[in-house]
Length: 159
Image (cartoon, rainbow, N blue to C red; front, top):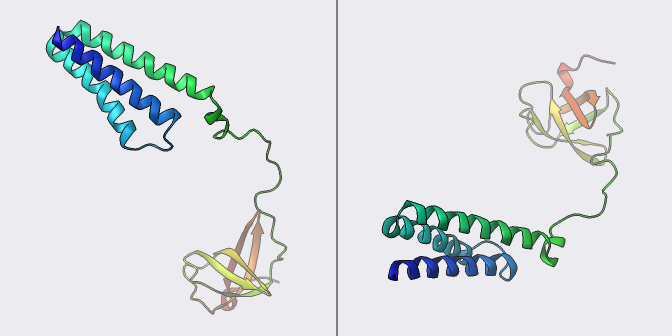
């Protein structure tokens, strides 16, 4: 009889701690881990002292309770803050206004990607060469979507 009480106590404590973690305490920390440990402990003690059938029943009750807690969380006010309700529109990255042949300077090492300075703008670029050292003069070879491809000035083959 004492083992049934211990299984019940571990189960209830685990559910209460998980409920606190989901609805009251922000984040996932010690309380959530202790709640999970309580639920797992109730299944282990049930299997060890009461038998496989009781352990299976305890596991099923634990799974159903956790599912119910997650369902309740999805319907609560707290979940409304976690879900984006407005439609986002627009372009994530504007297409650069550079044409092939535009000259710039590598501001960082291009291995093969890095940053190059064109007039007053610093932009992310991808080198057609393997490596380009900072301070090297580069020219735009092509623009594909939002990606700018460059080559060192001495390797540039374009017009």
